Image (cartoon, rainbow, N blue to C red; front, side, top):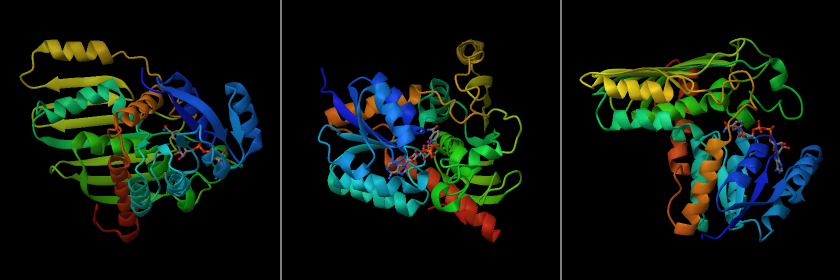
Length: 351
Ligand SMILES: NC(=O)c1ccc[n+]([C@@H]2O[C@H](COP(=O)([O-])OP(=O)(O)OC[C@H]3O[C@@H](n4cnc5c(N)ncnc54)[C@H](O)[C@@H]3O)[C@@H](O)[C@H]2O)c1
């Protein structure tokens, strides 16, 4: 049996989900939690019977902590990740890896220099339906891709952006944007992963329904590396919060999904059995995250658990994790290019 590895979770908002996932993941043991907010720290440490650190630096000195889950504000990910790498710890970094590609590069450099492993949370890539869609695209079943679209008409009340743990959201400095970087990064990553990367973008964004700095509504046009074009729409203004829609059009077929439920699977020349199989498997799927369009804490922990178990395996087998920082970087690069386009009114090349 593989060696069990010790985890320390820093940042106990989303980090609470990581604690649960660590306890569920094979080969993982929750050793410590850390938060500067003692009101968050003590109850979580008590719930899991683990060590409590109010100082991140002190947790990094704990030899029982071999992997750190970085769940602090997005604009602090690289800084805390670099500290972890320098202390010889492996890590799992919440999405986005950080808010600029330059900072993600610094983190990638520190991870390489330290010879540790780092995984990033993009749980949508693990969803079985999303994997089947990717397989259909990569195998050429859908033919040449024509259009790939992702729409995220979510809702967050003004209170979401307020208070000790809300006021960083929707800021440029710590959130790197608003609806596109915070909520929409999963949609951006999903469609770039499905389509194989984005070459250039055009964007428009603004603040429409909240008192925040960055944006709560963004529209972007994507030109994919393979020549397809597409759209991304993200907002937190859409009361009461509707579900994510992803549509893929290829020369030989169309696929559409509503959150994790398959709506359309039509592929030219396919026998009807596959359409029936796909609709049977995914067409009436109970949506585990059905409240997430309105409730930020309604995230399912399944994907997190898989990513944690994968990092344990990657360390034990000395291989790369399933979703590493290099592949998580592209979404950050795309989003920054959308904002640059919105500011300049010009098409912006990605990378
Ligand atoms: N994968 C997902 O679906 C998902 C969902 C929600 C949030 N997230 C990500 O999780 C991250 C955290 O988001 P959140 O909503 O939980 O934010 P939050 O503000 O609720 O939590 C962040 C916590 O980090 C703590 N913290 C900050 N700096 C610290 C330090 N140096 N040492 C110790 N503690 C420190 C804060 O006190 C706070 O409790 C963000 O990057 C966000 O994008 C991911």
